[in-house]
Image (tube, rainbow, N blue to C red; front, side, top):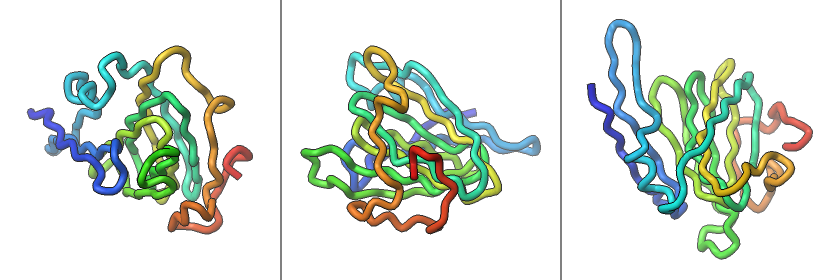
Amino acid sequence: MSFDFHIKESDLLKGVFIIKPSVFKDKRGRIWTSYIQKNMNQLLPDDLHFRHDKFTFSDIKVLRGIHSDKKSWKLVTCVQGEVFQVVVDCRKNSKTLNQYESFILNGKSPQCIFLPPMVGNAFYVTSDSALYHYKLAYKGEYLDANDQFTWKWNDSRFNINWPSTDPVLSERDS
């Protein structure tokens, strides 16, 4: 069984990487690896390592984000179900400030998206439900919701073409 990764930098947003793992299939189903330290640590600055994981389980039409902070590096994927993934460049000195890129992430055709700090993360659930995974690297303490920035999901600066104009939102994302 192979645990290879195809790692490609986004053509649009510098520092954002699309990671496609090898998938082994047989009569029992599929198996794939989302993280191998030697493969992923090459994307992080020398003194950082992934420190913790989070999962969200969301129902159809739920939109989470656009969130980020000044110090967290994220590796995200959809483990089960399907999401419309969006990453937004919020880095003030970037040539692609306010530009976004979208992806379809799902459990049937696995891929991970690697985001540097100040790149906003958001997703919209297109299946009945979805299990979404975050792996995080940062220095110091984790910056939770109160220390993160949040941009409105339909902010006109980004002009994101979401699959719905009427998503299910948290108060924070409204």
